[in-house]
Structure formats: C-alpha cells, structure tokens
Image 1: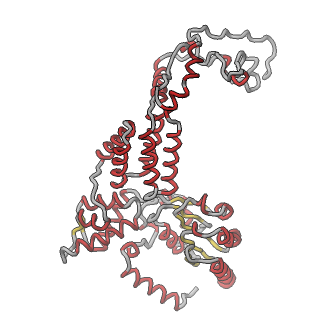
Image 2: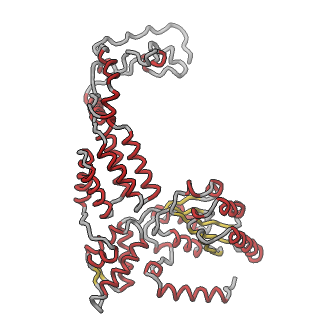
Image 3: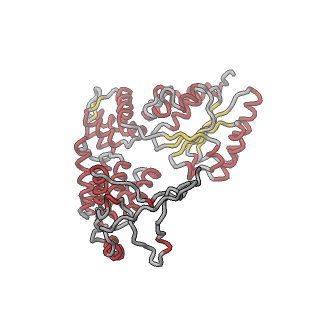
Length: 456
C-alpha cells in the first residue's frame, strides 16, 4: 500500500525530533537485535522473538518496571509486522477514542486487508469500562492489542482481557545491559567516562535504561562545561546529575554490609539496621536480595519469639515485587525495624540443625506402624495406622504416644527459648512432655491377619 503524504511528513518530523531529542530517544533501538537485555524473551528461539519473526503475534501484555524497553519493543513489533501500528496512551485516551480506532481498523481491514496493532501504553490506567470496550475487537482479532504496564496486570487488567492476551514480563536491565547502554550513550555524545563514574551511574540506575541515559546526558553536559574537547565524565558529574553522592559498594561491601545488616537486626539495634539498609539501597543493591534476607532472618533469628515477624518480612518481600523502588524502601524499613525490635529466638533454627545432623549421621529407623499411612487400599491388612490415637478425640486435645522411630526414642532437638511469645506459650508443652516416659518401650507390632487382604 503506497504511503500517504501525511505519513511522509510525520516520518520526517519524527526523524528531526530524534536528532534533537533526549539521548534516550535518540538511542531508541531500530531493530530487535539492538535491544539490550530481555534475552529471556528476545534471544534466539525465545517465545516472543519467535512470534515476532513469524509475524504471528497475537495480543500481548508487556509488564515490567520503567525503562526496560516496553514502548521500544512495541514499536519494533509493529515495524517487523505487516500491520498498521496505532499508539494510544491510557492517560489521555477515552472510550470514544477506542471506538474510533475500532472503526478505522474495520475500514482498514475491509479496504486493504491490513490488520491493526493497537499499542496502549499504561494500560493499567484504563478503567474497567474502557478495557471492556476493547474486548470484542481483541476477541475477534480485529485489533492486536499490545498493552504496556508497570503494574501487576493480574490486579490491574480485567480478567477477560488478560485471558485473551499473552503476558510477557520484562526484567530490570542487568549490569552488562546497562554498561552496554552507557557505552552507546557515551559514543553518541562523543564523551568518555572514568571507571568510577561508570560504576556509580550503573549502580544508581536501578535497572532503568531511560534513567541511566537521562542522567548520563546531564553528566556529559556538566563535564563539557569544563572542556570544549571530548568531555570526560567523572564521579562528581554523575553525583551532580543524580543528586546523590557516591557510596562505595564493591563485591566485598555486598557481603560485609548485608552481614552487618543482619547482625544489627539480631542484636536488636534498629538504628544500625536502618543505616545498613539505607546504605545498601543508596548504593543500588537489589531490593529483592534485601527482602530475601529479611525473610530468612525472621525465622532464623526471631522465630517463635514473634511468629508475626515472618508474616511482616514476607509482606515486605511481596511489596518489593509488586511496588518496586523507590516506594518499597518504606516496606523494607518497616520490616527491618519490626525484626530489630522483636524478641529473639533461634530455637527452631538450631532444632532443625540437630535433626538434620541425626538424619545424616546415625541410623534413623523406620516409621512406626501406628504412624504409617493407612488411607490406601490394603493398608489395614499391613497393620498401617493400627494403634494410632487421634489427638482430637481426647478432651485435652493431646495424647501421649510415640512419634519418633524406635532408634531415636528419648532424643531431644527442640529446646524452647525464654523470650517473647515462645516463652509465653511453651508452658503447656512443658507440662505435657514432663510426664512423657522418653525411655518408654516402643509400641509392639500388631500380629498380621491371615487370609486375603483388601488389595488381593
């Protein structure tokens, strides 16, 4: 189909804007091979790349943090397709705009046999009624929807629309991808940068390619003010562009600072724990790593002394995944202070260590007959479950019976801690176990019946 004059003028205008626009726009990839990162989607043989190369892409939702290439990818999808690309922003588009595009797509398909790709940026900003207006056209294939969102689509996109789309998750750009993007940016600006400046800029980008290039553009301008020749970007220029001082954070710091963070929580010092948390996040540490360590500490160091600590840590980890930085730093701070102030107990952690050592180092015996699974056909004839006493049938909700294998009778792994909720709830357990004969003889095996069994 011949290109209209207004298309030519639009292309010319876009070309001029690219030449004079922000660095991030000037470096926008012109082909899929120029995209940095997202190899899990765009590498050779990967699902999204295969669909694009075959021009068989159906409606998709691109979900990922800012600056990971969602808009760029959508435009390249259109460029690789024989269909017409129509971009809309959910911030400004209305139901009337959707209906107008549906009508235009119908005319386009009828007159020229050409399909339409509708790119809807920030689709999570569309209301339920606006998303519903899209549904019939997506369902029939009149529109191939490419939606982009930074929010979890399972919460923000209507289930019927989501079920008719393929979800692809874009990840924050990793360090090699950011370094490659920075190299391209320096080349485009005719500038160089010191190693410290590069490391600082990459660490503070937070996986956001657009943020990296925007900060680089400002840093180059600051460096250029010192010299008319090829600018050399230094740490001070990056600090000026980011509005943040460099925090030294090498490989050793990664391990040392997280160690100090956990030990401060274990030592019940919320001020020190918050310091180390701020130091990690300011230096560009992955917040998901911090969240994972909090979840571990909640069980390893707080444990049964405050059972809610694990819930708080897990909620913070979920918030990091759903919200991301910078807001999720508040959730991490919340969990950090909660864990630091909580009473401490490592009884569950050490008890498991003792049990694991026994399993590895000594004969552990067979499962006692009365504890074996008696639910399947033929189990009764084997004596499985015979003699088992159901605790719920006892008025006290507990019965004294053997649970360990014969070889481990009398073994103790769990020693209750004296702090917090654990100390307050362990008295009844102590009363029960005090009367238990740890050296009691095992329950004698039952005589097996003679004759046919259920599974014969």
